[in-house]
Image (cartoon, rainbow, N blue to C red; front, side):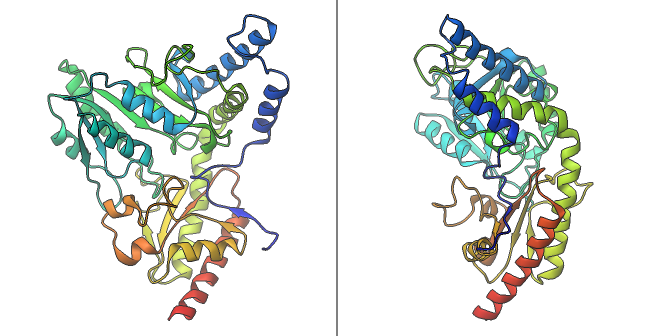
Length: 392
């Protein structure tokens, strides 16, 4: 394997910031007390939690009392979807066909418990048409769950238009809750749940250069939620169990960096993504971009994710061929790639056959450089040429 390493799988996980690693180690070595303990060590650990909670809240523009720390984005999503549906039988939930498995599989569990679930289609770019949501809403609809940015193709859902649809109903007195999976948007785009009228919003630390095993759920102050775990009543009574102080400390540091730098991140990453997409499309005849058009003025295009298909080749073979050259990408969602024979997202967008089999996801971060992008374009073109020559 070459000495050069280019990591372009940032939608699966990110390299922690050095400041994050330092905060995690410091919490393990110094602030190792139980935050619920009354003595000095407990108070010190509790103070770490308070500071991290304030940092995450500030990065979202919400109150610290509205942040619940969890064991990750998946747990935050489960808490949101299951926690708002006590006495679930007879309720109606709406989601989309391109959600993360944490949402779709949770909805399957809810269906088994008597909840009716409507899964809305998307267009060929992976985007929900708000009119589809309006048509699907019923008198017994209790929860709508729509992601902000799709984790496979980078489609940005029209949250402002969805917010307008739901606001009209709420003004008429309807009790209707809205959950947003913002895991892939957080740290790249402005995420402000209060401004949109979002009731529940999930984020994850390791997608923003924080530690793994830590997430957060924004729970609007007016939202009633039932805990998934019974125990000591930590996290406002919504997530029992001794808190992961080192992980949360690292999350707090990552959140503070987000709050400071997010405004400049999107433009920088997008310019690199466009350089990547344009370079590959020019160098590889027949390559297909899956998802929204890669344009700066396209509000449906996330800055960090590019999904391309190479018809006639298998994505897994491409992945390992690039890996041999020190480039790390993925074939889709890391949470499902070892189990799923074909991307449910691409299928929902209408992709079939060679477009499904030959898809690769390139996902960038603020750490990505121009030199890495140029090397990736060069090596991708070389790998594709070699494989086409081999198989054809």
